[in-house]
Length: 175
Image (cartoon, rainbow, N blue to C red):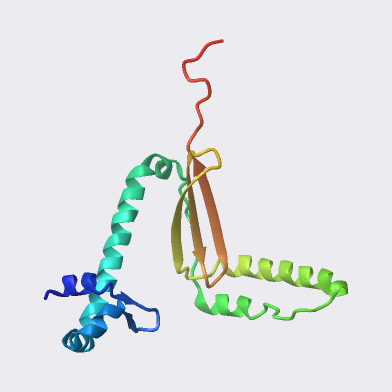
């Protein structure tokens, strides 16, 4: 039996902890259990490649469907002069203190504001590890909506752009 057919027959899925989950009907055939044990790595690799293929197909389909909105997204040029030493020196000033209680809310706000300013300054010297994510959704009135998020975990950079399909009211209708 081919690996693909075997996976489909027993509805095998990979768990996050590296284990495999299979349909209970596999228990009726000891040779298939042995096959599963002996080919675990290949099955996991196959499942991962299938997941990646499905994700890529879905992304390509969304890119085609939302092509008009993608063209409307503003171009983002993130300018900085990477200097790791200066970046670490500025980031070292971040306060990790947190006060509890209603009276200390003002202190927590002040610390958060100060930390945000430090991250903003450090971002000028960060060697960005940018991550761009697209969220393909709809507005409340069923128009296409695209949300692009550009972020850097090192300096807390976060840029969010939202583009929506335009609504054409009373198209060709005269009163």
